[in-house]
Length: 257
Image (cartoon, rainbow, N blue to C red; front, side):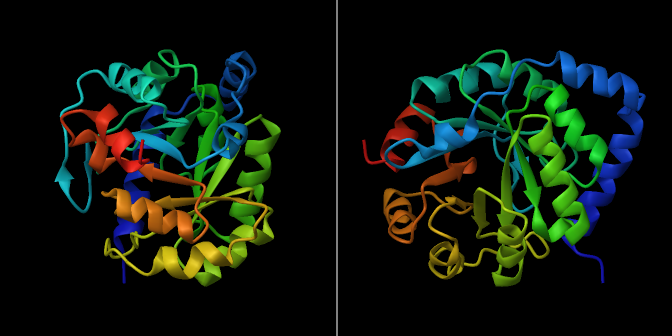
């Protein structure tokens, strides 16, 4: 039976076919891209760090915010002390675009995460060509060979990789490929349901030398403190920030500043 994730990936592949350029041209753009910023170092800094997301909509909540100037929002996140800016580039369900990533990357000095459903080698190279410093790989969307190959290729072109997991089996796969930044997503992408026990169960299982990221469903200081108590070094937050009248104040509140 087809899942929400299957449907999203199918749309991603259709949209990719419509914008593809010749592979040699893409490789030239990778070479010409600005040098990658060190996302691992940014997240490893002392204290809890936040990956602040530019997010217009989601499959679970629908429209969240009208973001006419993603670059301005990203700059506001940076001034508020975000360690990394996440930019959704999937258009059908999340209202993002590759042009959002280009605009944000040119407006901030901190690392930028390309948040999308990466299921082809082309997208890995495209991410770096667009200037992404950090790229998302969702274990649930990839075979073992894809996960290994895309993880290796991303490293070869200079990017850090956030490897996202939802359960114990996916966590084992992430550790097996040597993932250094592992995110636990409390939202099941196959059903869109939030698993409130995901952080409690999975974060402590991640090896202590990896950067642990708590993703989805984080809206309060208490939730951030709980995630930190389970080992999280960073949180990825979108909805709470874009719905806040004052994103900077929201960041300070979540981080207890």
